Image (cartoon, rainbow, N blue to C red; front, top):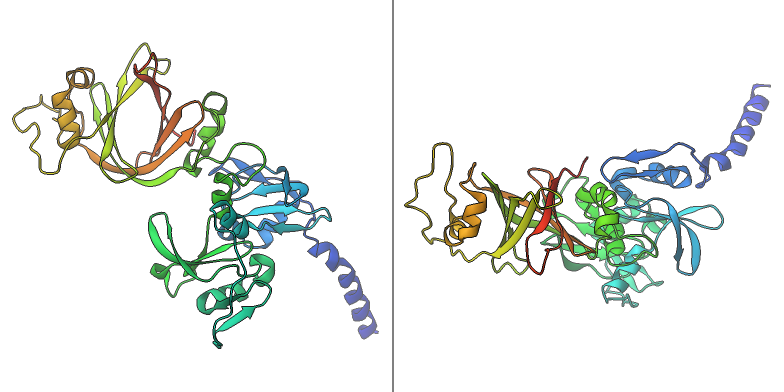
Length: 374
């Protein structure tokens, strides 16, 4: 009797398993993320949570919406590392972003050639590439063919956020070997292909996502500033100093040939109460600047590039006055937008400086300093 009951119970459980495992089983509740301001729900939330969540997919960077993907018009949602798609049969799958990224960067994948036999490698005749060593073990232990697809490149060296790494592309993902994490669970990381493909124009609707630290701000101001025009320039060296009448902000040039100094000053005629102008930094390291000026008590005389501009430009000195704190180093990102707007994000202060277009053929443009988390 016990055996019969156990058998019937197992049959009932087996009947339930397809329902429990159905990828598109809906969840009605939303899960929202303050970091980007977007939510996940339903089948996509279920897939995201069952298959690794934040570590695997990253934060959502768009709402769920309908797009045309490889000839199919289907619901999708973009994440920092992936694009999740609800197919016509209701099953959720990951997008082929590895292949798409190579296309968008002018390197469409082509069939490869097998290497000499190596017991640490496996060869995939479907694409002509080998999978070896650390990348092979990560592929096999973290979802294999369903999660990554076939390899579509050999391991190659690429610069990611300014540093060289060994990477290998797969149909759906890019694996990155991080030697600084050797021996840990983070030795192999998955590239931010969702963000990168979206920024390169890989989506068919809506704005490209802004730099993640200013995503909420970008959505709030979209009617004023438009969509991001290109990907943000990240990890930029900066310096900042507050003055009696405003701020000086130095931002390294993209070609590292020097920098640009932004003077943000109080201006009652500006819609935001502040305005800005920019000047090239002409300071050379070691150049003596303002060594003979004694500031009032509690104030500072700017030095280096700030000091040279302040000394040589009467207007700058007049609108800013003396510095109220010493200069300090910063890092951040620059995100261009439509409508000739630029947003400069500073990590240390967690503020976004919104620079609106110059007025009246070169006159100062409005500026506003806004916490992106607001």
